Amino acid sequence: MHRQGKKNAVPVNNRMKIPLELVDILNWRNTERDSQNHAANEVSHEAFVDYFLSTVHPVYNHMLQFGMDYHDFMDNNDPDGLLEFIDKYKDDSYWRLAKFANGLTKDLDAVKNTLLHPDISNGMTEGINSIIKCVKRVCGGKAKIDLLAAKMLLRHLNKPARAAINTS
Image (cartoon, rainbow, N blue to C red; front, side, top):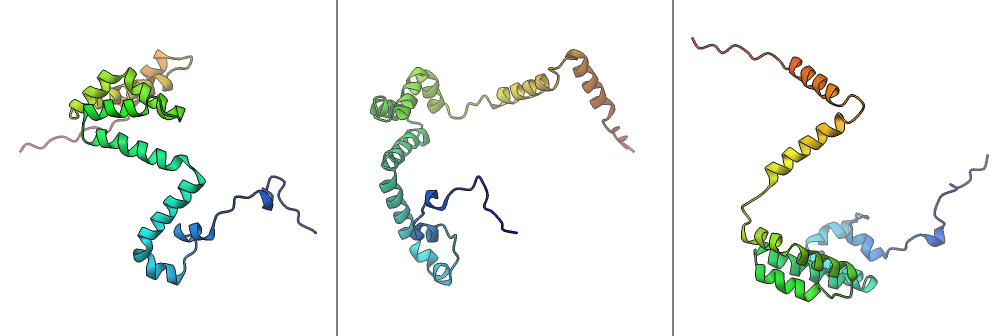
């Protein structure tokens, strides 16, 4: 019986062609030469990947610069760097970057406070909100409060009894 190919398979001529050098960089092929020279060629591999991505995708270098500028003011907790970042990218040719910068402008006071007071967090509040939302999802059917009461009762009944504390 003759086996036919998959109906949904991608035709050979439409498959993405990846240069063999890039395949070697990603270590998809493990050769003895690659394992011996891995440490020596690591820098040249990174340079080749950067070159390849920047030639295939012209926005690559611009996005790298955007990320470095963003992390520069965030890592240093620098409110003045925030303002410089917004001024630099608010009218960017890539609309998504401009939208991000303009979004920072809308929440400027909150972002500045985050930079000025990095030790303050609302993590506890967000954790409690997550628990409340979880309970709400579980009990959101027809039973609502009755189901919640039943679940709380079962949870209480299923708890193991505490061992008696021996004080003698």
